[in-house]
Image (tube, rainbow, N blue to C red):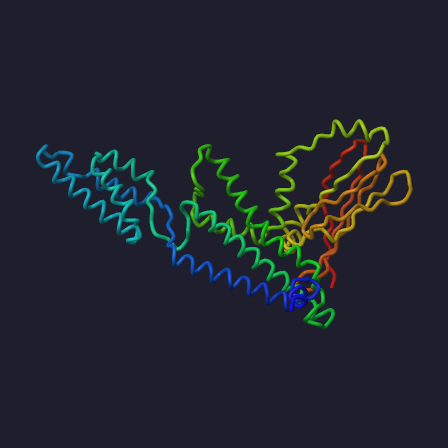
Length: 375
């Protein structure tokens, strides 16, 4: 029994079809859990009156008879005004207002004059009932769940493509172009992608607001869309964070350069990316999401000699290739990548540029520019 359990956890025991069914099962479990939890713990969100609604209120309050009323009748007209405001807001919010918060708001409005009421409602965020958790600490859980669903949908999409290719190549829908070795990376993505989504949301909040308030995305549903997209395109999110590290945590080379310079060798990092024309093409998004791990990157010495192959990244969707103990000099940097699209078209990408290794640490960005289709 224990041996069967251990075999179940080994990636090599999974076929393409079996892993696809497992991903669908995981997505179903997440969706069922999401729906059940939201039925038990009802969601809330903040909404504001739009310009048209503020304009309607402004016209009413400008024609309010309490402006010319005597002191004795002001109370009566204020009560009429407040009754109108209550009816108006309940109608516009479709009876979804949180009653406790709404009562506190109207108690405050009752003490205001008309001019203050307009200014207050123009900025006021009303708490209303919602399908989603978009207030308080549950906002983080909402983002995590949508990011996880984005990851699972993405994996289902790409594994299904791999299984489809196998029908045309190997003629075996159980294996084909699906590589079980990728499963460990896909499982890891289910954990790091939602976490990175929360980090990006917190970073966004930090940039737009210096106080310590809770998450406040301008468009509430925009948080859900962003979380799902971050999960679906988690490969791009990781590449973004990888580039961000040079800005947040710059690598100091002053001490290393004194020790390696005497040997006249250095380390090289090459970051592959798509040129603008390829990125905007029909296959650009699919190529970027698939990653550049399968590319071949090499250095060809300008003065002759053997080519130096750079080390491919461990992550399938990473884009940074590395080389160590590279002699100082001038080289031609070359990269080639072939990508097979859903319609079995072969897209060949390549790029090259002349570089000089003269420091202990060198970082180069190379664009893949050529774009050809075969088949």
